[in-house]
Length: 324
Image (cartoon, rainbow, N blue to C red):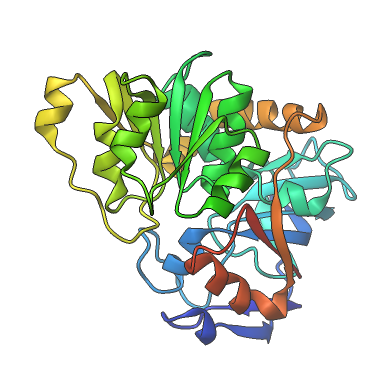
């Protein structure tokens, strides 16, 4: 079978498309034929050796996927060949088939296609955990979303709206802001041309926002923090800009801010039932037509390099999908 392989740390150009043996599922595992795999920003880091997880070589990028079960091994209940499923395995989904533990899979509801299902677990799962379990976002609160047109940021725009918040999209271009508004943002700030702190305060009548959702980091992190109201919650999602902001702890003290880390991957291991409940809610919204993840583009496995370069250049709005 075909697989996209990282054999040494490097750039997307160093990845290889190779033929490898099909996996053999162990007891408790199922064999899934992958119909779509989603790429995320951290895939650009993991192939460069800059991510917190460093899988042994050779490995495939792409953590999340959607597909059909081909076979089940001993001890598997609740799934059967032909079932449509989605899952997250950390890395290794940029290939034609994977063997995966059955408890890492969730059934795909009718009406949700593979391309849209593939990109749900990481970004929407992360955001649901961030907003519901960490920030405890309430209806009527105001939330600023940095990097609002990217895969993670867009999920925050959509889920924030569904949870009843007023969402202020923050991005680096007017086109990205228009895109975020199409997906539910109430207002927008172009932080390439505006002072983010002042803009957030202006949009809230001088009060500041209740929650900042920050998957970007960099120079805008402190500005967003300074644009929060008393008792605001700052969600640390990631550092797509490449730099970790140096947050002023004196301001955290003086304004009673909460700075909340969002390590979704570790949480799913510590609270698998909580994660499954969150994914059930997300899939229910999809089934009801209230949520429709945006697919930026679909690439064949042979063009994964192009997709990863577009993600690294922050050109992708929504999700980049691979079809093995």
